[in-house]
Length: 269
Image 1 (cartoon, rainbow, N blue to C red):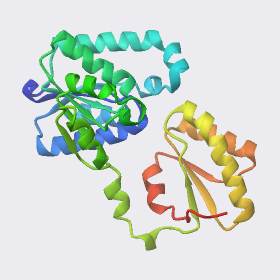
Image 2 (spheres, one colour; image 1 turned 45 degrees about the horizontal axis):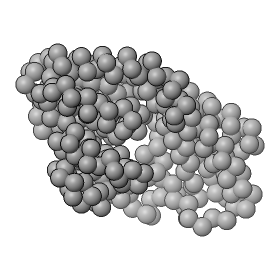
Image 3 (tube, rainbow, N blue to C red; image 1 turned 180 degrees about the vertical axis):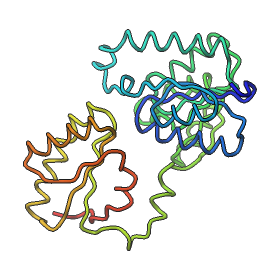
Image 4 (spheres, helix red, strand yellow; image 1 turned 90 degrees about the horizontal axis):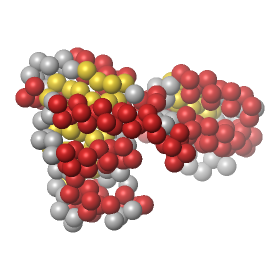
């Protein structure tokens, strides 16, 4: 590492987290070029960490599980990764650990860091939606974390009421999408976004493909495009679309661009 005093560890476990985390890494690096990143994430984060003089474990393909059954099937893998990461943090404590979404792993990691008394600050970026599914976890989070950076304005008061210092940063995509004039959107383009994990694609995209088929029947002038997180997902989605009898363009890594271009009205039936 070029300067251990500015060492930050950053942990993400999904393709969306990889995208949001790398944007944060770039912003931090612009402010403090001496920062060196380590941690776990995806291919975008891996490139940024290497450029900073650090290294990052690209584990997104294995870590992006969905649901209890997937977690149980990969229990041994996560247990090994968790233990190895704790040892790394203990052997070389960073100035701060930034946890990006991915609550099943990251909240447990925060508690383990506290339990081991590893001398580092713990920052959570993109709050898990515990306010929706388990508010009782918020006091536990307040004890484990040093700072919450949330993306929805109402979240700040919820976390601050528990004593957790909180900053509202805004949604990382809001500024980009709002900057696109409505006139530049295609009113005949409908964007489809099944998610960034394979199980999401398998469960959600057949429904989206069926909806696209209904749209094509009632509004044949409307075109559908879908964004895939990986090439493997794109191939799976093409097979699902073909089985559903739907023609559409499916591309990889284009979700933000598609969100900017798609302008089909909400009521299209």
